[in-house]
Length: 181
Image 1 (tube, helix red, strand yellow):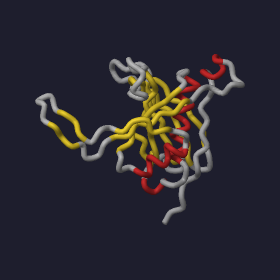
Image 2: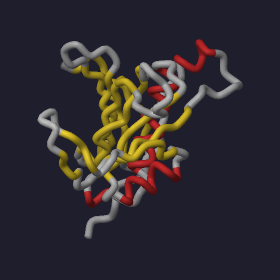
Image 3: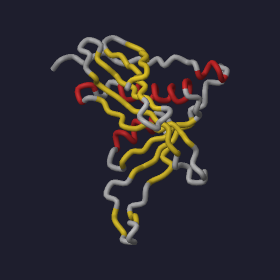
């Protein structure tokens, strides 16, 4: 169930909200949504949870780190900055509310648009899954669409104290609703 909801920001027609949900056994988890103010239609969403970060490979055991997953924007609302705003909102949640200094995600090799989005926002690709993998039986298989793991350091702004950074409100400017075709 929803434990709490807070508005992340608004603009001329869209609003982003954070609905914190606590699935059984999960501590920190957030669903950030972009909603059309005029119609109430959900036009974008992303999930943020905490998982062991597999990159870089030199860190073992892998540290628990915010993991951005399932970013989606409705077709009629793409190319307006919603995905970028939702990613930035995840970074603010991870840094300003949860107090983490990095965030990671994965993208399929075939998803070039997502790779460009994350690269333009400062994410670095640190690992590509191998094309071949082995089953427990010892048989080898080819991975058709391997994942790329991206990571970004998101240290709090140096002008804020640590306590202030954790209490930052998440504000996102989202573009307005597109004109009807």
